[in-house]
Length: 346
Figure 1 (cartoon, one colour):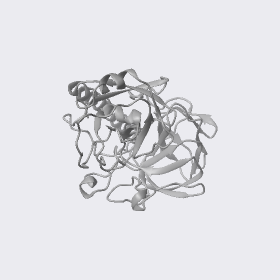
Figure 2 (cartoon, rainbow, N blue to C red; figure 1 turned 120 degrees about the vertical axis):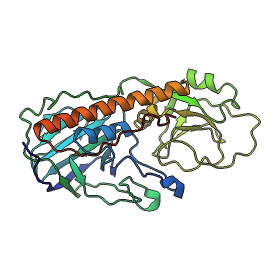
Figure 3 (cartoon, rainbow, N blue to C red; figure 1 turned 180 degrees about the vertical axis):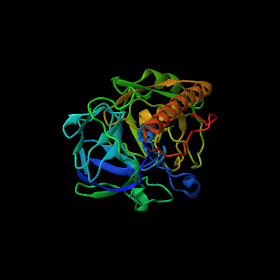
Figure 4 (spheres, rainbow, N blue to C red; figure 1 turned 135 degrees about the vertical axis):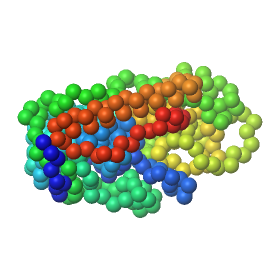
């Protein structure tokens, strides 16, 4: 069966949750101009949602944070929902997360009862109609680009999906090797590597690995603010503000631990005592206020290998989806966005 032409679809948002936004994987090279890269807090869930519907990994999608989200579409659409566990229903029928789902026209889709983490990702096969800032749909509210969705809003979608149906909505459409994270532990363990001030901070290794920290209510895309024990570096002079990686652990002048997120700017002169591994960043992107976590020191080599393994699993899923879609006549984006195997993991 040949893929049919693209179709213009209207998505009507009837419930928008606590905070729902257009999102993608962020801006490339924007930090050279002083603008944070931004992008989905949980990059793994966002990229996987797009893969499951045949999109580019970095295509625009919706990031839904808490409460209920609901929409209907003017025509049939092909969707996937990933991220933290939630209840997803299509026309009242429960459907699986982390799987592609066919949604008939004018059928209400509801995402509710979010638990364990705090963010879900909703991808549609095709291209969402949304503005871009510096080439990205990712929000940047400090630059007047909030990208927030509201109840009653109509969103355009140029859909590639036509001519294929799913007779049993409650059953997975395909058998796919989807790497689904485990959000269930009461205390999350996050892998970290050394930072520039680790050796200047006596006892920080033991403190981070033996203590339990709690995410505070003032956390956001800029960073997680953690309640828990800290120690301050010794013998440091003034630290000049400089660029820092996503996942950097800062200890400001007060007794607080901050883990910088995708909308971070400069270090503001605070010491960096550790850095979360790149493979751990999606988990941090799901950490809601009250979430408890501890930290595990790993080597750079182990961090790189875990990141490469994540990429291998994602590429295997992408290849499987493309092969299946080609076999049944479903369209998919031709350009894969594989990450080079040598990408730094911390």
